[in-house]
Length: 151
Image (cartoon, rainbow, N blue to C red):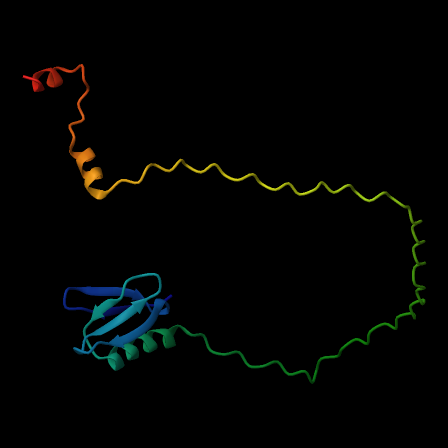
């Protein structure tokens, strides 16, 4: 795990080089570095400069590649011969089940739903009658307010 130092205007970031996911240059020329599992960081420098830092840090950490092993001196053992497997006969077919005559199930006749009860229709009223009914005072006859209305 190799750490790299990325400079920013507000401070410096110490970042693991392996955790850098992407680099981006915005329209205004600012470079942002995307970190795996984190927020993007606003850094100073171009994308090329930041990429050179990241690649330089990750190149130092990589181990040299091992040479491939040659197979000239290796001796391989021959596999032991296997005996021929015995032929397997297919299992016998299952005996057919005897047919039994069952009486057909009685199907209940479909019942028709009764008609839903419909609300009783009120006598048609004109709009003026409806407005007159709505404007009438709705006060109970035994209240004190009603007693004062007659005076």
